[in-house]
Image (cartoon, rainbow, N blue to C red):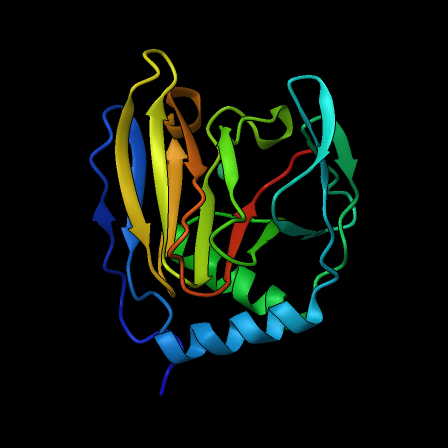
Length: 202
Ligand SMILES: [Mn+2]
């Protein structure tokens, strides 16, 4: 059975001015589950300290930053040097890059251990990502809700259920027009890993 069963089946997400598409079932469920367990066991997960309202706090999730040697990432006021690629992640990077029609030199891995782990509202708009970044976001494990909010009006505009094996592609003005988050979900079933592939120019 192939890990990637289908040719490109991208569906456009209706978000005015943005460029968001999703490919549900990009990776098959068994392959996604295997990868979830492999990465949970093998990545050097840590709690990243982030700045919220001027205060340094523990982020409510586990994270690992992996990439080319020069791909240092600054997030919430903290610099994260990249851990080296594993062969499996490098192969996955190439497949995601091909599917997204982009180049990636780094990946932020986040592990949401259960429904109490979350990600607050933000845009992926760090200067080193450039003005119109392409971000490839692969979900492994529990289905969680991913929301968009208009930066200008503050209105919630869209909520998506991201299922295991789905690949979300954000490009164009998505980051400059919208914030996104991953709210807590009391009823989430088990852990979720999200791999967001990026291109960092340093
Ligand atoms: Mn993000």
